[in-house]
Image (tube, rainbow, N blue to C red; front, side, top):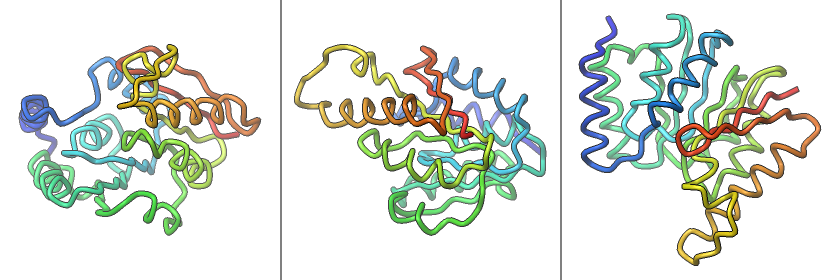
Length: 196
């Protein structure tokens, strides 16, 4: 039984603790995508506290399985508890470790891959996303505009690497002929890439 009340509490706590979670308007768009695509298998890169994975479980059929990767062990434990309390632990598998190490060893094929982890690794995540997504499937990447820095002439030292890698991701996603990409200005930017 899906527990919306716990899900709301997870969201509230994450915001209080400054843990980055998916923004409401981004979630609204993804909900539309999930209802249209009806995925049976989703891969999420970046679990955090399990908020988005639980939302994906809410917006998909009961036979949709969600695999999610989290690098931080403590956070993965918290996510596991949250997912259990929300009532979707039978549909969400958390893999603990660095996605860069885990992705090459996955042999599932996914309908949707959702990227929301280290911005500096987005080009690597895209590369594996293409390999792991079925033909016609989707790769979604959150925070792709990164506070507006990516499309501006931003060059401050602190975020420079993240911005450079996000620009690389966008270039590959929009110029690779196997991919069809649109970038939406919802939340902090969402890219939607169809793998052809």
